[in-house]
Image 1: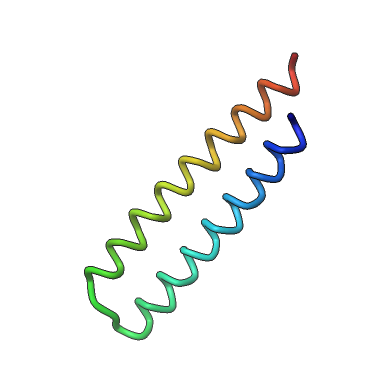
Image 2 (image 1 turned 90 degrees about the horizontal axis):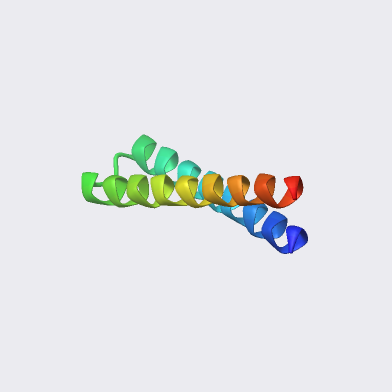
Length: 63
């Protein structure tokens, strides 16, 4: 179970990083604000998922 959560955590972290870079590159190119806002919402959601998976991993490691 810990292995599966670790893999999901790594995927969530990589996805967060990807969305962050996509937003930064879009901002540098001057893309629309609507796209930037959508990417920001995705980033926040993915960060929340990564944090929840990290907490789950810590709780699984304790017991």
